[in-house]
Amino acid sequence: MKAKVAIERCGEYDAEKLYRTLKSAAQAADFPNAKGKTVLLKPNIVMDATPEKAITTHPLFLEAAIRIVREWGVSRILVGDSPGLQGPNFTARNSRLGETAKRCGAEWVDFARSSMELNCPEGKVQRRFTVSKVLQSVDWVISLPKLKTHQLMYYTGAMKNIFGFILSAAKSSYHVRYPSREDFAAMIVDLNVAVKPVFAFMDAVIAMEGPGPSAGYPKQVGLVMASSNLLAMDIAASSIIGYPPQMIPVIRDALSRGIWLKDLPEIEYPLLKPGEVMIKDFIKIPFKKSENQLLDFVIPRPLKKLVKNQSPLPVIDDKVCVRCGDCVKICASSAMRLEGEGTARQVKIDKSRCIRCYCCHEICPLKAIAVSKR
Ligand code: SF4
Ligand code: SF4
Image (cartoon, rainbow, N blue to C red; front, side, top):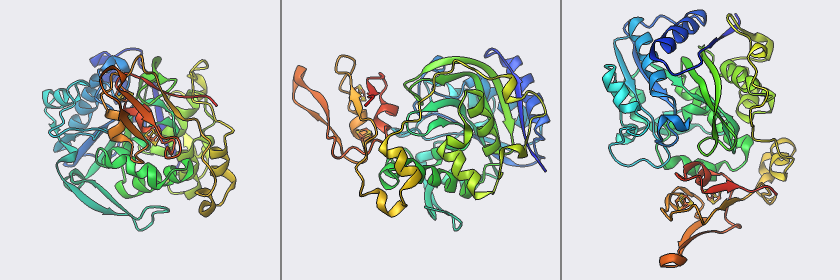
């Protein structure tokens, strides 16, 4: 049987329009029988920013998803995520996702409250994850990604969104363990194998282009998508913005395993087709012919650590930086530090320690960190 990806047009964040288009997409994508299930809706909250910044899944999109799954008979709806730098009792106030969940009768869950071990015996690089314990109390996980570019992984969507189950700052330690794109992608795919999300609704009404996933620019795409096959959804979404899907590391790794799909012709589009809704001027992260990318393709995994990482370094704009220290906190390889006092205080990067994970770029609330061109 083919994997169905339903793509519908929805040009604005209007509660009724979102509900109608998302419901028709879910029906066309054969949303499974939800009666009596406890469901976790997992929006993307890489950083708790206001909705117009297009960093997070829009609260009205979450509202539409809650209405739909409730209508289809679920017994309990939980909503939550774990951004990179999360304080105690996180409520997603800026993104309005916590308040939306509660207003719509769902339960907001603080992912960081407790953790559990999740085995992944089939894992390629990771056989055990420490994840939010919320997983223990749900029957189904539904991914609610935002369509965005990603400085490290080029594209982020339904499968990458599952990385939110790793608690807060523990995420950056995975970058240290898996510094190459290829290995990091394999870890994300392992996590999807372990978490087993059953469905995804993608918010591509306003996407993010340029230096995503948090420092890019909102871009009108005007689409919503639904699928029970997260890989198929990511293939569709990445091709809509102009990427060759097999060049996206997570997609390439997932395809190679043949769990969800083996090839692109196995996808069926019951509504719109990606070719009909392509965004030709979408600003993407270019595939660099850097040594790091060559590492990913041609050098055997055991030798990679011996070759110097030549990917672009993060660069801080001192005129924009307010010295909040968030980047220093998130940097798992201790490559950043705040030096000096008073007006001379500055964030410094130790190039020899930097593994080019771009977590600092992702977390900076003021977009003060760019990834420099070589
Ligand atoms: S996170 Fe951004 S604003 Fe804060 S110290 Fe780092 S560069 Fe400066
Ligand atoms: S400086 Fe930034 S890119 Fe380099 S290791 Fe630290 S967080 Fe990652």
